[in-house]
Image 1: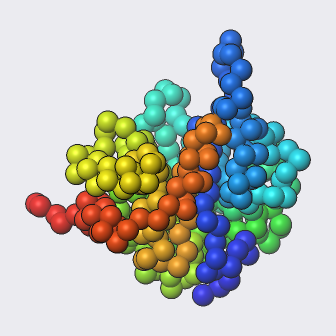
Image 2: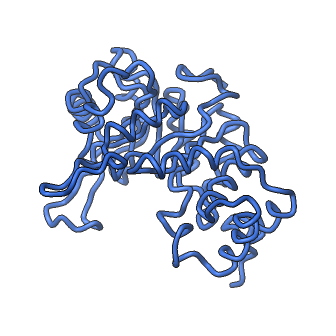
Image 3: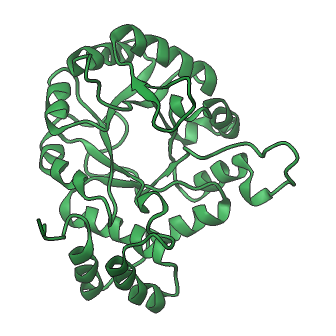
Length: 296
């Protein structure tokens, strides 16, 4: 187990902020201080949320860099490379480029857009079917040696990919989806513990499925009682469950909810401190994606 260069292995950040949807106001929109990108980022830092996560494919690295101006040293700044949008503009039109030349070129582009001389945590955004992960991580290790990135991360990979990558260079973080409706990340936990790698759990609200009408009926019912008892939203309870499940199953899990307003950010921060009862946790575990018994 190799110590992380960003945080103690047994004490990662409590919660991060996903910036995928952070955008400047559209032309003609009335000013909304609650949704000002700089205000959202500053509110996160003020609340102790220092892990800020973006990606080249999000198209907002320049905005994130501007929002972070003057407070760069307070943040653990994360970005990702490898996923490239296709010409159609459709959400399903994308490909992965993870060869060594792309690694170097992508990092230079991200640093330029972010306005920084080092990226704290740089992820391969998605596994490649063409480029062996050893080649990709070897090129990322050269970025570490050059002082352009501080640590290496992987996202949307397999357990085998993670092990092969870690044989080339320590992997500080693995980013995978984990929520009441997505439990595949739990299969990584034994390997993460062995390698000393932190799980950064993105989309803990299930891409919005846990804060609206798309919530499965049994999950909605399990969220309703603790939400009423605590006087919070079901989405906050869903996020609190990820925090609790992470503490119970692994030493280092960082939930990464997204937010585009200071109000939503503060609700997410408050959710990290919610205390669910054993009975509430058992009910949520039972209806979670990791706790469901396969029926066919």
